[in-house]
Length: 404
Ligand SMILES: *Cc1c(COP(=O)(O)O)cnc(C)c1O
Image (cartoon, rainbow, N blue to C red; front, top):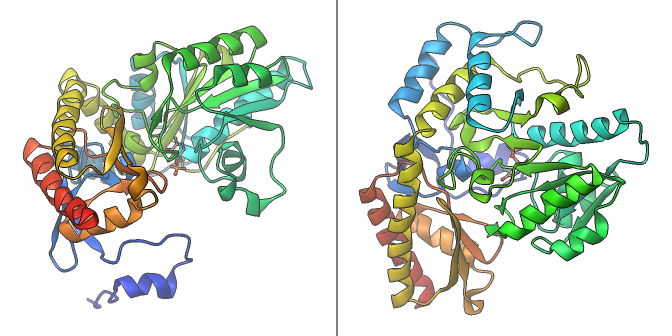
């Protein structure tokens, strides 16, 4: 057999279009909440592939589902349906408000589908002027041109103008401001129940409740982007269940495949009729391999043990982080829900979240940022207590280095 091509971190700079600046080591293997790099150094994984690997790495049952399906059928295309995708649809329907599902491959695509559904639904109602979308400052909805325009961080969209029109942004958690811009021309309001990329900022319950009422008053669709908050991340299956506010359309991806790319838009029977045959689609959407993996992930996570375990694990994190913060007062606030944890840096350390995660890497722990001032943890929902303790001990050493 031919030798595999030798690769190092330098190969990234040599061969990859430089849209990312990955860490200076290459991970090669993972098991549970531990990963190892090319040199055999171990890391505790508090990132989980950005809220994706919700059951850690190489979960035996997920692996078995993947291998079993891999020996049967990988892909068909949408001229032929398949068993795993139908089973996954039923699982999502049984567990949520939804009656119908559209599958795709990513969060951006799920949001793209949701926004297209909203525009067409309004048009089908006969109102040509009803095409305005309301979204929020600092929101993140993905990187397609439509979703990056709906996102509330102009730095991600401005270089790609002209952008899709008819999108208005207003401050998150400011219901009075939302009331000013939501009217009979609004076809949809899109919101993350907890802004993830925007800094791990939970919506206030009255805010989501108020958006629901405004949407009802003006005949607009309420779209919850649960790409990051969904599939158990907050300790309930979807965050809307905590809030008691039911959207018209919900998007889910990231943890849905546990590391295998898949996304979905779910909605009611009535709204699903908007997207008739030929109006929308994607080659890989509902691919049997992805659906078989997601079906196993979903049924493992949607259990009282795993969902209640999220709350338990949050307590471990809060206890450990509080202890670190007593010794080195670096955080002004720890916020989020369940295992979507944002640690806000004190003004004294503003802008240094990235540096802190780099030091954390050196100490053997993987962490994320959410903007320049927030360190974010989105670990496996089943991370063992021992790994939480060891990871936080390593993280404490990184904090000590930045504080001294
Ligand atoms: C990650 C994310 C997206 C984009 O998902 P992709 O799979 O990267 O396209 C959209 N919305 C939210 C809330 C996200 O966190």
